[in-house]
Length: 123
Image: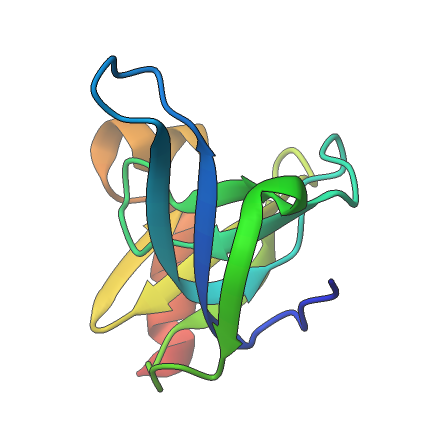
C-alpha cells in the first residue's frame, strides 16, 4: 500500500480491542497524507489531523482494512519551514483557516515565527 503525499484519504483500521465487551476496535482517519518522520518506518502512513495538539496520526499499515483516496477535497496545505536559528525544518499545516506548527514554541504559545511566515506568504 503506497499513499501519495498530499492526497486526501479516508483510512479504516481494525485491531484487537482492549475493552472487554468489544472484540475489535475500528477507527476511521480522514485527512491529507503527510511525510513520515525520519524515525518512523515505511510500514506506517501519517495523516494530518488538523488538530493542533496532535497534528498527525501515525497509522500502521498492518491494521488497515480499507481506504479511499481523494475522499474530501479540503484546502489543507503543508509547508516546510526552516528555522533561521537552529536550521531545523518544521511542518506548518494550514487547514480550513487554522494553522499549526510542530515546533515547541507553537505547542506552548499557539504562535511561532514559522506559522507567522506562512501566514505572510498566504496573505
